[in-house]
Amino acid sequence: MRTAALYSAAGSLLLTSLSAAPAGGAPAAPGTAELRGAATAAARADAAGVAFGKCSAVPDAPSDMECGTVSVPLDYAHPDGRQIKLTVSRMRASHKDPHNSKRKVPRQGVLVYNPGGPGASGMLFPLVGKLPEWKRIAAAYDLVGYAPRGVERSAPLSCVDPKHFFTAPGQSPAHPSEEYKRRRIARAKAYARGCAQRSGNKLQFYTSLNNARDLDVLRAALGENRLTFMGASYGTYFGALYATLFPSHVRRMVLDSAVDPAPEKIWYQDNLDQSAAFEDRWTDFREWVARHDAVYGLGETAAKVQRSYDTARSRLTSKAAGGKVGPAQLQSAFLTAGYYDDFWPSRAAALSAYLKGDAKPLIQLAAPNQATAAEAENSGAVYTAVECNDSPWPTDWKVWDRDNTRLARVAPFETWDNAWMNLPCAYWPAPRQRPLDVRTGPGELPAVLILAAERDAATPYAGALEMNRRLSGSVLVTERDAGTHGIGGGQNKCVNGHLEAYLLEGRLPGRRAACAPHPEPRPEAPAVRSHKQPLRDSLKGKTA
Image 1: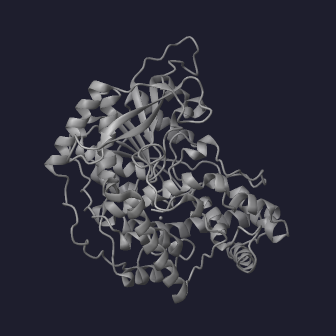
Image 2: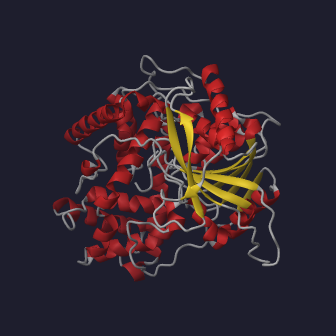
C-alpha cells in the first residue's frame, strides 16, 4: 500500500480476482520448521537480552535514550544459519505522573511500537515520551522502537543506487497513454531486477510473517513473557499476524489504522481499495480549501479547487518549478494531505502562491531532497520486497491495466501512481507466499484495541471492521467524520482517553465506541514544512 512520504466511489466496481501465484510459491501456512525456528531464536534472545548503550543509531539522541541490537535468523526454517541484527531504541519508564509530581507511577513493562510502511523505522518512537499526549503512558512503560529487518541498519535492503533514486521532474498522468504505460512497465521490470541483483538470495526472507517472528524474538530479548505492542498502518497487519501466531504471548495490543487483513485482500486488492478511498479524502481536502477561499483564492467550490490544481499541473508539465517539481512531485506533495489534515494549510498555501507567481513555497514543499535519497530508497526497497513476497500478484499486465483503467474513471487522483509503485510485484523474481488467515477464537487472545478514523484513505475503514471481526473479543474505537491516518496519541482527546485507559488500566469500552472528530485545521497559511518532519508526524504510519 502506497506510503505517505514517500482507501468510496468505486466500491461497486467488480475488480478482478488475482491470478495464480508463480511456480515455486511458498506454502499456504507457516510450517513447523519456521515455528520451531522462532521458538529457538526466542529462547536464545531471552538468554542474551539486549546490551543497551549509547544511541549512536539516532542522531542527536538525548542522553536518556539507549540503543542496542537483537539477532534474528534470516531464515526461520534454519535458525542456526545466517543471523541479521535489528537495531532497537529505548527510553525507560519515567515513573512521573504528569498530573501529580509526588506520585511515583509503577512500571508496567515495555511498549513496543511499529509505525508501518512496510519500510518505516520506529527508532524515534521513544521520543514521544516527551510529548504531553504520551507522558502518562511514558511514566508506566519503557518505550521501545526498532528498525524492522531491511530498514536502516537492520540488514538494509536496496534495489537501486540511491544516487539515481530521485528522478525529477516527473509526470503523473491520471489517464496515461499506451506509450507512457510501456515506459512504466519497463521501469517496473528493471526495478524488480535491481532488487534481485542488489539483495541476492536474501530477498525472499523479507516478509510480514518474518516481521511477526522477529517481534517475538524482540519480546524475548527484552525479557517480557507477554508483549505490549502498538502498531500503526502496516504495523497493524503484522501485529495481527503476531496475534494469530503467538496469541499467548500478547499482554495488550493496539492496532491503529488497521489494514484489511483478509487473505484475498493482501496486497493487490488492498491497494485498489486504498486508491478508491484517496479520491474521497482528496474531495475532503478540496472542500476545506473551498470553504476558505477568502484565504487561498483557489475557488469557492471543490470543483473550482480541482481546476486550480489542474492548472498548476498543466503549467508544471510545460515547465518544472525550479527545474525539479513536475506533476509527479506535485501529486506526491498533495498525497500527504490525504494522510494528515494538518498538512492541508501548507499545501493550499503553496498551491495558491504558485498560481500567483511565487513558486518558492511549492519548490520547498515538493522538490526531492538528495540528502534523504538513501533513506527513501531503502524504505521503498523494503516496502516493495515485503508486499511482493507476501502474496500472489497478477502477473498479466492486462489484469493491472483493466482494473486500474476502470478504477481511474471514478478515482483518478491516486490510482495510477499507486499502480506504478506496486507494479514491480508483477515481475517479482522471488517466491511468493500465500497470506496467513488472520483469525483468533474466543478466549485465545487478550482483548485488542483497534483505532480507526472513519474517512482514513491509507487504510480504509472497512479494514478496521474486518480486523474487529477476525480478532475475537477485540474492541473498535472510531473517530467519526475524520480521516487522519494514525490517531492514537494525536489530536483527539477522546481517542487518547481510550488509549490510556487500555494501556494503563486494561479498561475497554463495549465492542464498539465512537469519538467526535478532532477540529479541522485552521486556514491561516503557516510556514511551509521542511523535508524533515516534526517528531509527531514522523511517527505516523506510512502505509499501509
